Image (tube, rainbow, N blue to C red):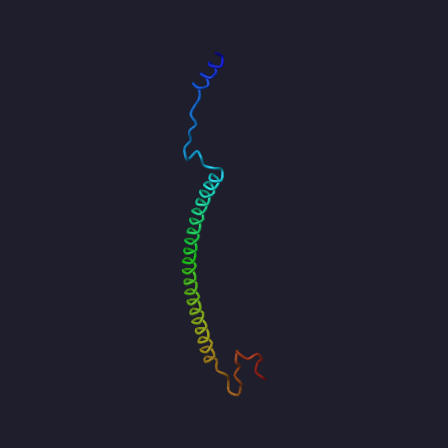
Length: 119
């Protein structure tokens, strides 16, 4: 009787053993799945970072190209202005030299020479 009471309580409380395919994954399969998910996530983030880097490089190249062109243009303008000022100064010097006429018998002093004219 005691045996019968124990058997009945065990049978009444027993659950059938049943498992699904998801529950039956091995540790190796679980690790593989997690590693695959991590790999895909990292790959997506790296792809986004590479894309952002390429966009930044393109914008930088565009900005530097524009700045370089502007710098070249301004350098050309500055060179042209400097050439013009040099020509104006040379012309003014020639005009001043023409106005100053040496007296007869004296040698003309050239401002370009280093030594004064002999006495």
